[in-house]
Image (cartoon, rainbow, N blue to C red; front, side, top):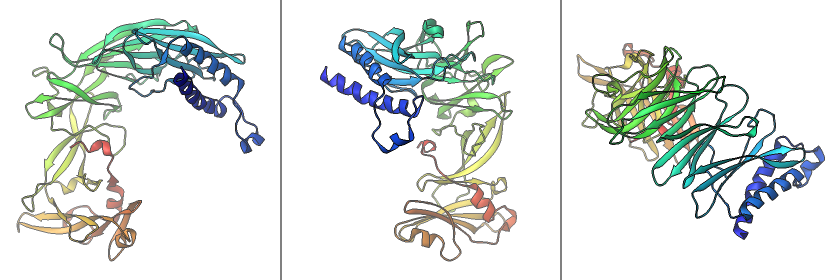
Amino acid sequence: MKQKLILVVTLLIAVGAIFLTGCFRIAADDLYSLPEVSEEYLRLQAHITMVLSQGAEFAAPTRGPNRQAVQLRDLNGSGSNEVLAFFSVPGESTLKIYIFELYGDDYVIADVIEGVGTEIESVRYVDMNGNGTMEIIVGWQMGATLKYMSIYSIAGFHNQLLVSGEEYAEITTFDTTGDGTEDVIIFRVPTQETSATAKVFSLMQDGEIVSEETRLSAGIESISRIMTGRLTDRTPAIFIDSEGRFEYGSLVTDILSRQDNNFENITLQSATGISDLTVRHRMNSADPNRNGVIKIPELRRLIAQSETEYFAIDWYAYASDGTRSLALTTYHNNFDEWFLILPFDWREVVSVRRVDVTPGERTIIFSYFDVESNTHEDFLAIFKLSGENAIERATSGNRALLVTELTVAYAYELLAPPNSFGITFDDYMIRNNFRLIFSEWITG
């Protein structure tokens, strides 16, 4: 019991700090002294301690965006946060979510959501129909792998179970229609009896839940990543990267979008049951130029200067009818943590090689390949410099600094006059197209 009380005090100090910066005001003089704990906070602490004293233990959600044992959320649009506390009962499969509401100068138990399972896998808060009141989406863990999703309406703090018993592997929320309200989407991997599917749940204005289901690619074994974004026509879409065993790779992306009010997998081929165009070796979908349109990567081998192979990445964007178009091409230097967006006129005429001669300097050389003479003409070098005087070395000679990070500097040098060989390269293009790599894109 002593350990429980220490934990609740620690948690509620954090809660109290949020109160002091939220709906509670601090006088200017108080900024020069230690903050005093509010009466409301002390009363809330007493309520939670009472639950713990009855044998309950904290049971914070283990996954998802909200993982605290005590959480603050304005559930009904009142402008004041409610407090949600998550508990389990040792020796039982009972899980409870207490919702505390500030009533006057005291907190009261406004509602209690009860579930069955070994732990609370996740919790999300979404206003599904735009009425100003959050629905609560709870994932209940049942043993090592089995998970069930429930959706609760808490209007008037009288929880109503809208959806229950929906088994899932992954879950997300997203505005699939673009109307400003979010839907709940669950994803299921295949079993011996069922195929892989995605199911979307929408809440109508009259409180009715409607759902639609669509198939994912046959052969997937696990879901590795879920992204939400846009198609080329700005239609909202969900991109599901899944691992499996396919003829041309181990990763596939299914793209889900509403078409004529139907929730569909726009990349799924009826003949194979697989999103064939997106099958590849492991490299996740991403938005490298950050325009909101998610792209699917495809490796392309560059012209070789030696036995070492180098690759560009062609990024394809998809339209609502499932057709794709080349959006951009990049060269990714994962080891040095940078990439360059390549102009389209570099395609089929540019080669790459690495030159690491000077300690503390790693260099990539871009060259123009002359087909007639079968020669490579160097036109651009990009450097990663580390160690002493990295910034000074990044600006020495004809080099120009791109960006610095702590003791590391990135720089470039034009090795030929700008826009030589009939291809686009100059200072503006290089500065505008150079990026540091996000670690999530380095996937092996």
